[in-house]
Image 1 (cartoon, rainbow, N blue to C red):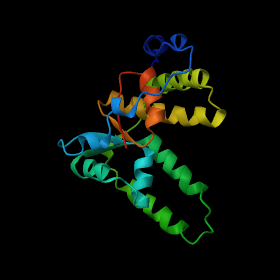
Image 2 (image 1 turned 180 degrees about the vertical axis):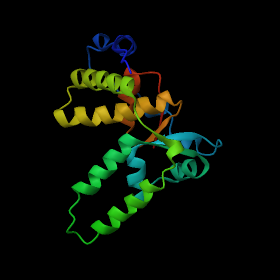
Image 3 (image 1 turned 90 degrees about the vertical axis):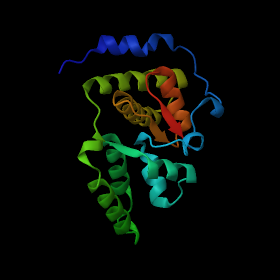
Image 4 (image 1 turned 135 degrees about the vertical axis):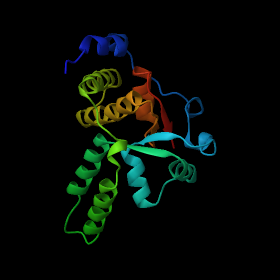
Length: 186
């Protein structure tokens, strides 16, 4: 596969983002509570959706979206979840239960609803992460988090899906640089 970096540069335009971006007011963005009763929607879950679900801390509106919606999954989220499992202290009494929970969860992701970033998405996500790192003054760890979020956002956008996330601020900035995608926050 050939990567069309020129097309990605034309879409992202890193040279146009010279100043720090401002977050938009929450009311200008789509919230889960705004659409929870509107019908069945296809969504791509961000990593935090799985974590909040495991903790039993999902808001009611998000529960409704997940119950009524068609949920897609991203391999980037699987990487983030498995990093968290392996990074947890295996000597803690709760470790085996956490490991088993995520093992069962991930094994039940239907392969027909598992999305993986392609080469062009990787290149474009890198441009987004680099642009935001420079414009927002991100530290090293923030660049890596932004890269993962951009991968998730663009993978969803390519599939025509919004991302369901609690990371409103991060996805707001990503969407301002890559306007072709959407997200729903909670």
